Length: 125
Image (cartoon, rainbow, N blue to C red):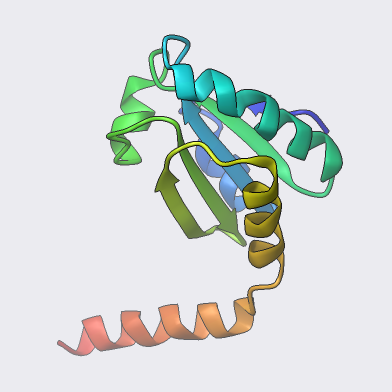
C-alpha cells in the first residue's frame, strides 16, 4: 500500500483505527523532506500491513501545530493509537526498517499497563 495523505479531518481516525501507523510531516520546500520521501514510499510499498501517512505541514498548519512539529521532516510512529516514536530528521532505508521492526516488536500489553498506571497515579495525586 502506498502512502496516503493525512489531513486534520482523518488524522485521529487513521491513528486510532489502524494497528500501526507511520506519519511523515513534510513540506514541499524542505530539501531533507524531498530526500526522505522515496525512502518513506519504498517502506510503504514493502509493508502493506502498516499505514504510511504524509502530512503536508503547509496545507495542514493546525494539525502540525497540534502535533508539536517544530522541525521537518518529523517522523511519528503509532501502534494501537499510542505514539511510540517522534523524531525530526530524515532516516536512511536501513534506519527506517530498524524502526519498523522495533515498533512491530513492542509488547503493547506492557505499554498499555504503563499508561494505565500513569493515569491511576495522576488521578490519585
